[in-house]
Image (cartoon, rainbow, N blue to C red; front, side):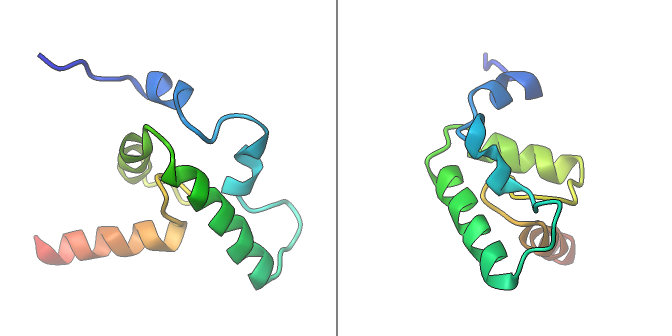
Length: 89
C-alpha cells in the first residue's frame, strides 16, 4: 500500500519554500533575457536538489500551470513536453 501525498503535503517538503522562492517566477518589472536566464538557472539549481521535484512537475502539468519554474522546467519546456506526449499518443 502506498501513501499518496496531497498537494499541500509535498509542497511543504519543497526546496523552493522560503525567501528564494522569488526566483521561480518572473518579477513584476520587465527583465532582460540574460536576467531571466540567470533567474531560471538559479531556480532549476534549487529544483535539482528538491526531494519532491517529480510531484511538483506532475502537479504543474496536471493543472496546466502557465507561469514559473515547476519541477525544474520552465513554461515553454513544460509546453514542449506536453506537445511531445500528445504527438506520441
